[in-house]
Image (cartoon, rainbow, N blue to C red; front, top):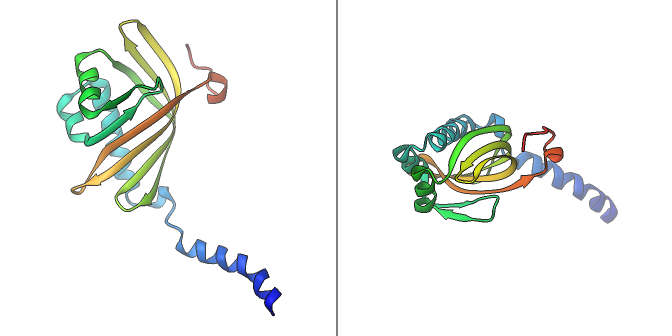
Length: 160
């Protein structure tokens, strides 16, 4: 009897886990709202629209660039609106959302990003993790972490 219980335990645990598993992110009603919020973030970042960025970014924003530089909301907005950093394009190759906790959404994927700075333009493929937090009923952008991928790993052969 004891050995039967030990053989059934993994099956019971798996069944229990499936029963408690959250909806797939594509089926989650929050996903369309987050996609819209993120599309607005990308547009505001490219246009360097201070008022829109202020509304989208959480006051607690931590933005870790693929270079290793880390910005706060104030320093990142200053870099964007002063023109020191100009995003020319941000094109997602993959963007997924998961919901690990109430009022928290993780956004993961890959994007081709073109950035213009004083020393020229750079096109790179990034793997990223973005964090959104619901604050007072609105999704706000809380954190970003990215790393550069080699062109072959991204599968796109993007220009350098």
